[in-house]
Amino acid sequence: MNFLSLIREKAGFTSNEVKVVLFLSVTFLVGLAIKLTRAPGAPDALPRYDYTRLDSMFIAQSRAADSLSSRPAEQKVAAAREPKKPPAAGSINVNRATSQELQRLPGVGAAFADRIVLYRKEHGRFASVEDLLNVNGFGQKRLELIRRYVTVR
Image 1 (cartoon, rainbow, N blue to C red):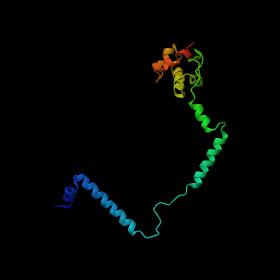
Image 2: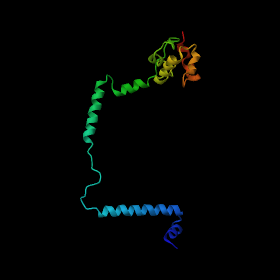
Image 3: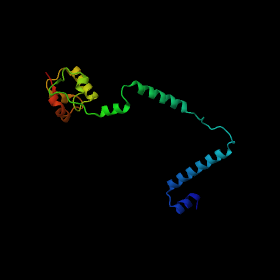
Image 4: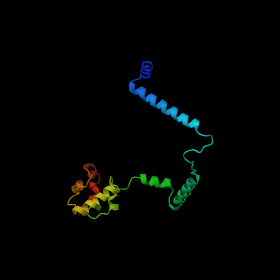
């Protein structure tokens, strides 16, 4: 009986599992031999690098950027989470509105506002509010959210 069969019988491994265990064992032994034969005090293969200087530069630049802003970071995050105040009913003409004006609509962010403006440039004026459904990604639910705020005068 050869060595592999003996291991399979004693440990209950499949032949592939025995091969993996042998490979890992040989790899471990080779690494151990290399470590033991290396001269004491020999330099490591990779030099050590001290990142404290870069860390302190990053912290200083972050503080400088924070001091330039008018509001602390916590207030900016809170302001970003605040729900937008919807515009007055029928106050936004989708045929003339800028991207910033369209972003005031509920459910319309920068990406959708830009898509509406791009669609308007490529296809011309919107004949009705329902024509917004032709804008990529614009669905019935979003249309119902904004229908009362928009017009196509």
